[in-house]
Length: 201
Image (cartoon, rainbow, N blue to C red; front, side):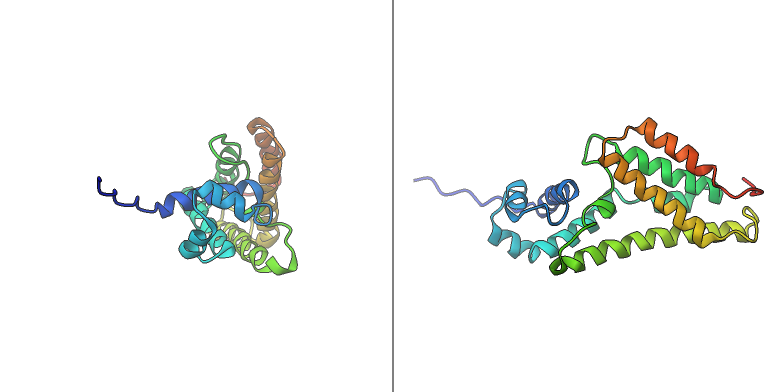
């Protein structure tokens, strides 16, 4: 009788990636435990043992998403030489990713928990906080633009930051609804017309 082989090591990151795609495509409440375990190739007890439960798995999947797909905004805000170039890159780089056929459309942080039952309010609040962080990052870059003389001193950076964040989140919804990159690009072109008059580019 031949000896049994060693059990295959559990690929935790691979399972997490598969769970991320399920949550991204179906949302938190739309992703059943059966959907998740089937995609991950594990049974429910193993899911709980490895990740602590559905909500804990979701939060870790969101963190994984942000690490793998969520860097466009911060990179654009950090690397572009002007505030306008940074905001434009945020919109255009994310739009390209939102329609990439290699993964579910849109942004997981925007789409995965827009509606939740009271029992899952914590999931909604977690993503809302992440979306708020994005708006604050954009607003902070606009404020730097005012300090650098790129934007007029009387620019309402809070309102402008909120506007461009609304456009960014709207692009995600449009992508999920089937909008093409040229259609998203046209919306971005119109949005950029709102850049304050008298600004130095």
